[in-house]
Figure 1: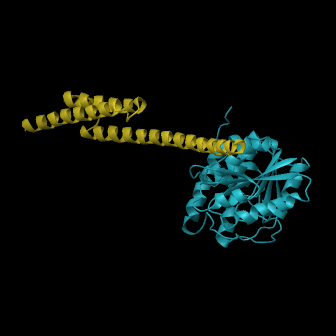
Figure 2: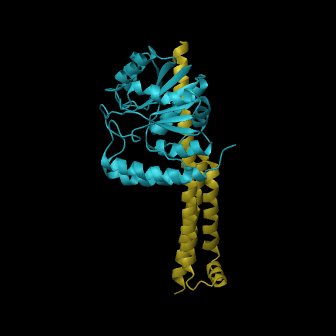
Length: 236
Length: 117
């Protein structure tokens, strides 16, 4: 079982080395084999050079595509190179590699097409800021409305995909703020989504892409994107 | 009273001619794709039409029951501008999508090449 671990990075020189090494550690006592795939989203620091020193695949984007485009590059790579499964994991170290076992479980046993690692089911570990939690709760209700499914941590970027789901996201993935929006895409393709509790850490360094003044604008944009994605016609 | 409207007529004819010449030059130099040039050429033709046919505006205004004829120009112009702006947004979105796909393809190919060499 070959699993691609897709790590989108933008200026993560402080964290990326540790993230990749932690993943390689996991390989020692796992039934599957993890292949870290770092997608360097045109970083201005030495993310790419640091990642290349480690044992991993580095895909360098020639222009900055944003998180959605970067992650999708990884999905495409995984599909082209015949991986059986993929995991998406943030490059900032907030998703501990040890938690990979929890999100791969339901996919390996065939109970889900997509597994989302969630902070909020039982409420352990780092819980994110107040304003972000409000936004996340809002998206939870919105997504419940559109998909009829309760997803607690809609913005989590810690996910596992089986081959079927992988082929779908490689072909179609939202650009901006893709995590909440992509849940609608999954549901439109009747993929079975499962959420499992994982423990997350506060980011180890670097800066979050969302925060402060732009939060309201962010929510509005995601709100619209979710509504439109729901009504989008399937490309045949 | 009669001399003033002629001045503006001559000005508009000249204006639209210069505009048309400008569009032609852009196409010839390859700076403007024919696809988008069509819209501009149609615009200039309409401008020319009303520059020569002075009563045309009045006649159309009467037909539509518009009290103040020049307001038709504003209505038409604003409408055309909005349509064209939407068209540009569509073109822009398409370009963005194509750039995204190219960048992704390129990143994967670069990796493949490094592995082979």
